[in-house]
Length: 520
RNA sequence: CGGGCAGUGGCGCAGCUUGGCUAGCGCGUCGGCUUUGGGAGCCGAAGGUCCGGGGUUCGAAUCCCCGCUGCCCGACCA
Image 1: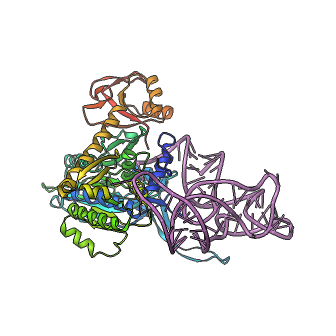
Image 2: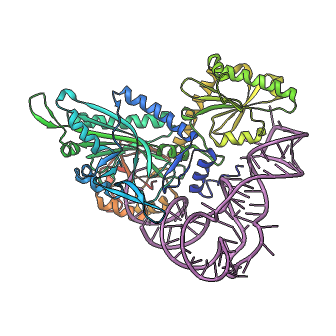
Image 3: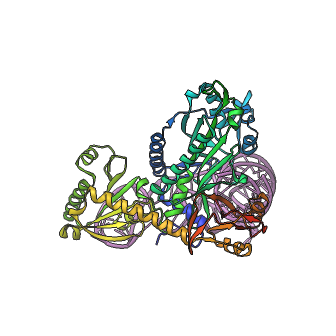
């Protein structure tokens, strides 16, 4: 049906790009690997931010902001960290420009200590923490920042991997290793809850193997989601940094018993990558599907009429419905808002919106496609037939089901209930999809064959980096995590992750199954 | 960063092999009329550094060189 979107079955990567374009979420910038996040895409990010920010604050964290530029020497202070990030850092070497004598310009003014554009902020924040922490009374220090970071990626994809991206990075310092470990777990749980409750994106929690660990961390935990093509998307990470950065930046404190010790730090983050994850979790061949809780526009009313007389009646009727859905107060504010002629938009508390599409340049069917491709959860069609019968046709975006509703039933409570039901249905659908494509595998041959079709595979692992590397080299699949849950639902029933067995590749003993998949 | 493909009004493309006259087409946009329950029709109009820079030539969208950006594959990574 959609003319501008390649079907998923034909070319999944192209479909992904087509959906972003059709939904008007983002576009490429003139700079390689960078993107312009357009208003509709940014509105989705704002909703994610708002919800996450609340969860962070409810757990005692506060926001702060640290510089974009990091002294080059800082990166080198933590050996593993520099090893992991050195290759992908943008470096500032000059302080200005000058004419090159040939009509162009060239850098001038080489700077003494070169600056790194932050790829992540452990080092610059570690430096501050060293000043901020004096005694055990200063701990825990629970900081988050919303920022952009830059990593010089070789291969980029809109939202999933861009050279510059937006994220939040939490950085905390604690008195004991135990507290830091608890914090690391706490934030992983917050990410998992957020992903499921808000993004309707089911995730598996677990620890990363040493090979996949964050550069400089003692332990890295992650939430992993399955995309519709069966590939995994690492959707959030939480790191227990031990005392590595505390030692590198001399973050010490006086203990309760007069001693001097290094703090234990954590860091954790999610990024605009989540938008890519949402797209690939829910959307279909008709375009974007957004979970209601992050949809910038909750519902759109599309009026249908022929003659002028009809037009008047229909629009009055549609405005009545809009008023009932939005509430009197919000509706009144909208009536005095600027720029509200073609798309009459009512802003609800919490910044969700309902709008009445008054554009005369577009016919109803075109409007249907327009809003469908942008992932608006509910479309309410109102025409002369509905006016006569006291009804309205409600179309639910995820399955495009149509329900003829009584006008009187359409109110604020109905809207909330309907959107909540849709939110839940999306999570259920995504979870069912993942379960269907999750299975236990006990032979390497079977694994190699199955991995071609995508999906999650729970297989025994002897714990060696050699086995892990060999599987990665031979199949492009990696260990996504050592699952946290004892049981994981698969197509053929629950799968134990704790039952001992043997690694099908090496034949050596294995304490339990780990999660293998190809990943983005 | 290696290999392949591509870049032409806002979008999608043709033209390039074999250099030549005013660079075409569809969609979209603007104006008008007619229309409106799943991407309407007619009439008229606007809109172009042919990715950038150099070169060959009387003449370059077209041929050559260098660079930039995108897509796919590989290595690397959130």
